[in-house]
Image (cartoon, rainbow, N blue to C red; front, side):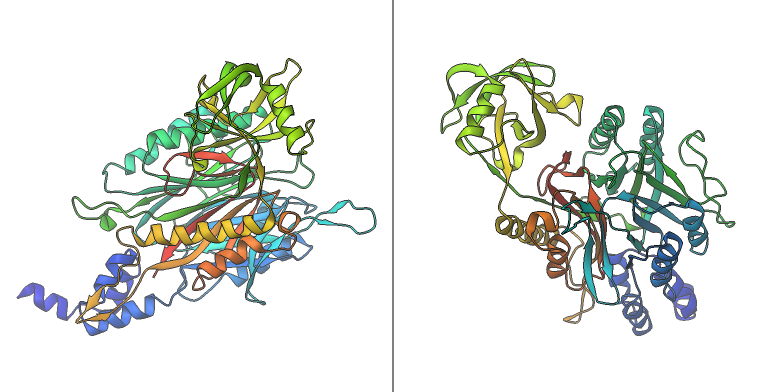
Length: 521
């Protein structure tokens, strides 16, 4: 009786506040309780869960203020933000960004610089990819200035942001996230933004991604490597963690990373910013049910095999020394030849420039599916070997592995591949528990989960220079998810994502577009 009376006299204002913070599935179920709760659910489903804005104003301060103003909305309380800025602004003023963050509720921010910026133009209601353009007079590329911001409210999710500058920071981050992921029913997802301009930074990023895979085997890791128009000295990662009643930033990793306390945001070179999202306790599925991901990844790889495949016969560290040709069944045939000689033979057959770098696909077993190939940049060395630029020391090829030279596909095939990958992602998402499931009350559908927004990490080699026209990858996202309110991202010097769709193994891609999809209702 007391429970019934309490439920009757529960303030509708309190009910609204409670429902504002529950997860998507629980919110849909709450709509079945009573008519007033159904009205709350209907109203909350219309609240912004993802807002993105874009500006190409030449003054950095004006551009930052514009995107933050456009992302403001009544009753919107974001808990995570992503900010991508052109490195060609005369001054990247951290205080300008921090002053705008101070106006928001407590949240975590990750971002970086890019030679090109991807955003959603609210005025024209369409995505835009701002990238360096060719000048008609001298043929030299011309930089662009742009800012893209996304604010998201991810309900029933424990979000943290970390700044990784060394291996000790990495260990502290893993321990902090593991402390929250104590139950196998909790899902965890990561967004990684890295500045990796030196070999040491590159290897550290590789260790970071590998550690996340090993420590959280069911997680999805996506992200990108900061890029710059000038290629050196201008790339940064952005890290902000606004918490507490006073809105001051709190140092998350060991207290020894560059202090952001009291400032709200820092811009760093050679570091990695990691946003972790862990399913909150109240949103965990029942015993025996599979946890539903908080984000979904889609990887658009557009490559074609060129020439025959080879079996690795001799290696020395990251250098493939000798190979043997493979027949149609994947068996090694013929004599061993120098890997560099084999590459040059293929280059002559398909009319490639044999002096330039080549794109190599390496797989652990003969005759692999193309999705199993790990793609690496290959450089011909003087002794006839083929040096692979590896993102992880553990990816050194083994004797018996397959080596396949690759090339990017033609623009039409690449565009088709992007649409296919997004369609397959839709199918994969619809098969996951808790996604797309209509909650039925007396035979009528109450709500349905869907993609509200996304991040796009696209290779600097894509865009208009690849397709012959702009905005192809971002428009493909909008076509696949028309109910979404825009995409936010940048052109990367390397894209972090699953090896292929549905895989839980992460790698650093090249010439790829990686999408991170955020669910809403």
